[in-house]
Amino acid sequence: MRKFFTVAMVATAALGLAACSEKTQDNAAETADSMGNDVANAADATGEAIDNTGEAIANEGTAVEAAAQDESMNEAAAD
Image (cartoon, rainbow, N blue to C red; front, side, top):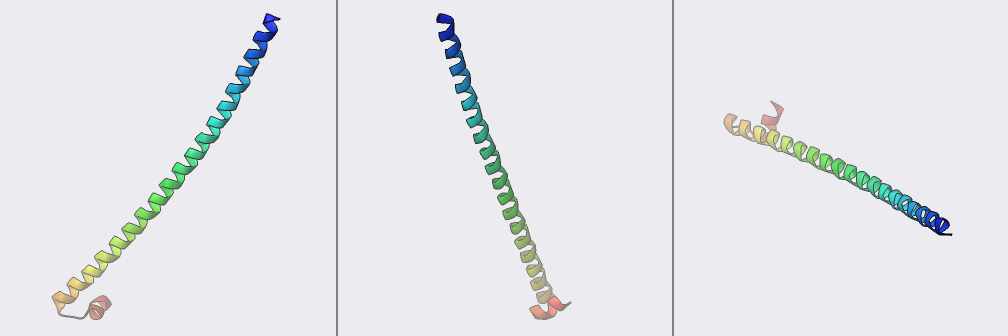
């Protein structure tokens, strides 16, 4: 009887650990997906910021050229 009780307890413990392990794996997968989404969003935001900076620099260059050549912004942009 004692052996049967011990085997039952070991089996219960093993099933409990297996259930916890599956839940942990699910949580780890969700965390990895979330991190991947965060990285993708950060990369998109960085790309947009770089694009905006490039446009601002181009506009400033046109303004400097216009001032140096005493032209309007449209004339400088056409050059």
